[in-house]
Length: 349
Image 1 (tube, rainbow, N blue to C red):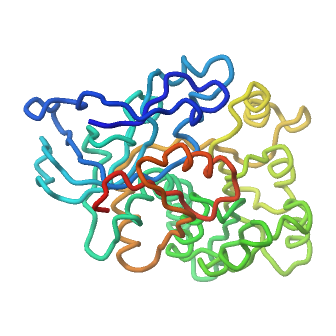
Image 2: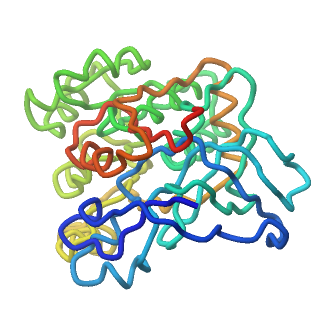
């Protein structure tokens, strides 16, 4: 089979990616239990695809190489040992991180927990975006809303969420998931993306080109026009600036959720200080969590159901062919992506 592979990530994994002929991930007759061999049609790119491999000094230890990039996409079942799936069925899939076998290949072997049938009414391109960003967004918001709703009384305000960075792949999911769950949503983005975030359902949008986001949040809280937030989800990785100001705009019982983060030693040190130091030594005074996304069939099914109901539609920034994978990653790493970057592996999709 054809697959994109990189043997080193020094200076950027995309510089070293080559299309190679490789063996199938497993024979057609000896699949492991609860797994499926998938013929890949579409792959959705994520920064985490190559993030660990590109970590200075320790990248090769964090992500074994040579490696095929890519984590999630859509394809058809060729063979399966999962009784809930059928040969020929269109499925959304999500692979495990930091493994050498990735999605940018003609075939992938997928464990059952990461393989979900695409429901009627959901396009393959939309379904391909769910595996990482959609499930991450669901796990960042849904558990906190559920806990709040279990304590909710008639006089309580709607659950209030601030999403830092609402126009990227995960942020666009978060806005729509939060609205599907009945939340009041405030998000931040750059000037060109304000209308996009509003179109996705955000109740208020902070344009970070007009000043520091934390200052805008403080002003909202101090004006008395807005109640403090129950949940903050940070996709941008601004812990020192945003989290240290949380006492001014978050409820005392609120939670600050960090999505991803800087994997340099400086970034790791900052996250350690936030998590473990007392406030007077540089720590914080609000509950802080670093979200470690877990592949989940249940969460993927939930997001796909919202898509089927028309409650979620993810903008696609750009689509590339299978021979343009290096260009696709260059576009992803250039930043300011509105929604997702898609690669078509099969010419039929």
